[in-house]
Amino acid sequence: MSTQKTPQMLVAVVGVGLVGSEFINQLLSIPTESSPFRLVSLSSSSRTVYFEPTNAITSIEKWKTILSESNEKPDYESLTAKLSSSISPSTKVAIVDNTSSDEIASMYPKWLKAGINVITPNKKAYSGDLRLYEEILSASKESGARFLNESTVGAGLPVISTLKELVATGDKVKKIEGVFSGTMSYIFNEFSTGSPDGPSFSSVVSVAREKGYTEPHPADDLNGFDVARKLTILSRTIGSSLLPSLQSFASVQTASLIPPALEGIPTGDEFLKRLPEFDAEFDQMRKDASKEGKVLRFVGVVDTVKGEVKAGLEKYPTSHPFATSLGGSDNIIMFHTERYSPRPLIIQGAGAGAAVTAMGVLGDLFKLV
Image (cartoon, helix red, strand yellow):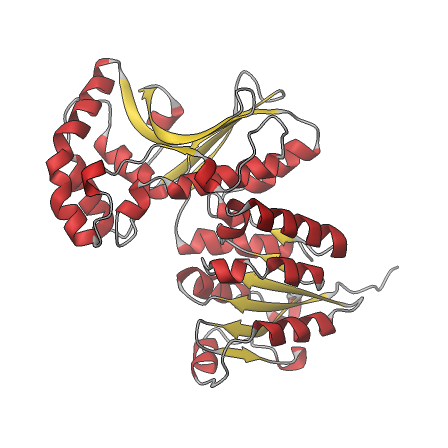
């Protein structure tokens, strides 16, 4: 019988905000005696701590205090050196980036080259400049370290992993379409129910903001950029030569819902104050859809047959899953492939929230064990 032990995994966490804190709590909830993970480093925007594996952080109750009492400033060069020097046949290392920082994302190639695995819900790297994306692929291939980003699309839903398996097993993806934004999902689930009447668009957006579904400035959701980033990530994961070359998420055909007259308004409060001026336009779109027996949904589409990647407001029959299956801030994604045709593979569920996002990140970490 083999007595070979599972290699231990040293984990460094960058970003301890809403998702980061939840991830740390979930990680530390695993009984120490059965966990392969050793939490050796925590970094916020202003503080950092690092411990040797034998003195790893284990307490859910104390980690915040440990970090807050540190006088050390984040030093990612030093962190890289410490982690890479710890790699051995019996020890793996991983950095978990729970930020939305471009600066941290730019570090991924260096970390991967050093043999450090990278896990993140940060969409910036895989949806930003094509050059960074290619550097990540090259660095991962060179060292064998893995880059995992399940939670960049659909939070904890198995979207990225499902797509990877479809591609790896030789299925041909024809089209992916879905409601990818929890914010947009909530707004149009409330605004467009199939009836020609209902609450005003501005009132729905205001309530969504009050519930915490939108960014402090709702324009940051209504511009569609979040969906465009997710579509870019999916497109690059497919890696199909049929797709147009996406230099970044800015290459996606994105139909913003921000009225042109409200572009550039600096504060969310002022934006919401003026949004009612355009309620009549949104109300007319709802009535037009209702006459056709349809609802409005903000969807993203990756069409490998047509070579299109686009995000915008579309109309769907009231019998369509996008009309019948969504509640709250749910996401729903349809995979149309050679194997899953004419009935698509559908994934749906909570597509936003710290708990499910952190779960997706932790699930990626387990894939390295």
